[in-house]
Image (cartoon, chains in turn cyan, orange):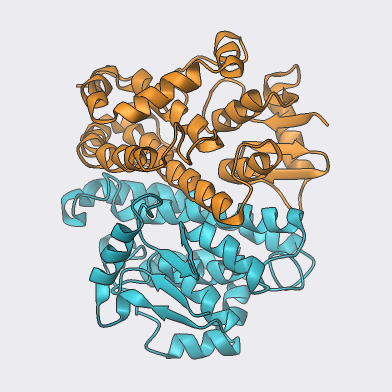
Length: 235
Length: 235
């Protein structure tokens, strides 16, 4: 079975956490939004499921199943591609961690869109500066400090111990994204999270991920996605 | 087995979605934060799980398991208390819906805290007004319109059809909360979502929920929770 990923073709966004899992697993998939029919294929698919519609991309077609919400897709893929523990307790734990990453991703997005997703960044620059300051003063230390603690306590090279999970892949993306969006702030902060930085580097070096990152399947970071580089926010 | 719910004692907050599920199921539980040891019991419990710590309340102790993140707790409870479909496809679908409610809850919180959770509301009143306007112009119609559509398409009285799930309980809470926080705005909007309003009323009338709402186990809405009534935001 070939998976079909439905996500915006121009950005990494929330779809990237799914792409990284599919790539690491070596699972065959089509990135439908980046195909010839582009976003119209996404819209058509949303219309085709009027009774159980996804609220928004990303969603994954797996045979007859259409699964929406990033963390939910990873819950599904993790069980099928050895990217999550086999026990119920272990699966709930990595899903819990992924949901905390989901919360962090919202807060990252809110740094440039504190007044909401419908207004342009240019129309909310002043509140974006305040939100970004609070994000780096309070929220980044809390979130990344938490994941650093979990990693240190796992007794292994990965967040749950000896085996890689989709959470490790997502944390790679968080570090890569924060480095892109806030190079100066992140550089100053990295000494506080040596474990996460090392995890990022080890994930980047994994054969499947390394090949993916070097390919044109990896969309470059840009100012339409979650992680945006705005000089004025990166003091 | 008696569940232990760990959540702040003063607010409904994110814990309320779990309380509603436990109450509807008639599952025995202790609301630990509201007991004699209060929040110190919550802190002690977080410290006791240094290797797999919850990021924040709510979390649920179920035997040896400690489960964090509201939607994750509901995923667990839904399977055990007939508050979710039995098939994998059905479980993923209701979890997907719950994660969309999770996103909505963040946006509700952001109406009064657009500059971030660490600053007081009083210090972000002007941006809160802008964010709230956008929320009611764009986001409420999108989210509640979506759930209205799903309910209409379910072919039954509940979101997934003939049987109640934890998503129905959470939608009850969303309607109740928006009515509390924004009585004028919500009154004007309710004609657009007759199905959800009817669902709210039917949930409120269910014996276990009715008894819960009338008890002192239900914390009243107040201005420390997610749903806050600030006159200046409810034009």
